[in-house]
Length: 123
Image (cartoon, helix red, strand yellow):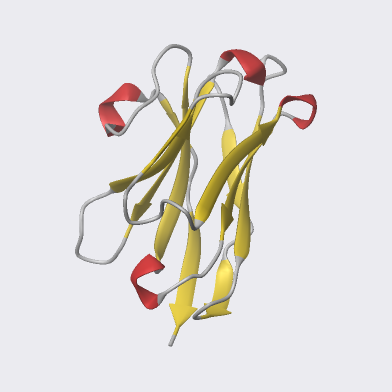
């Protein structure tokens, strides 16, 4: 089983930036897709961003396009989500996810999930 651990969450003021990290336990992380989702209190988990095995193909939710950047460092078995121009609407628990085959906007496409990291954006 692939173990994923998110980090980098915290409290930030509106307009600020955070970079989330997702450390994978497998050495062959380059052969796994990567996705980021978030869930706010009282709301369902929603798609944020995703990347293919190589990271060359990416997909973003319209709400974060132009502000967030998904990337990965296969040498460190780590994925990243750079979040810029944060707003209070970005406040949520952020989860990283991975799969051997699929990437996309559906939670059903991912077999492996981290425990989440809290991001709180104050106004």
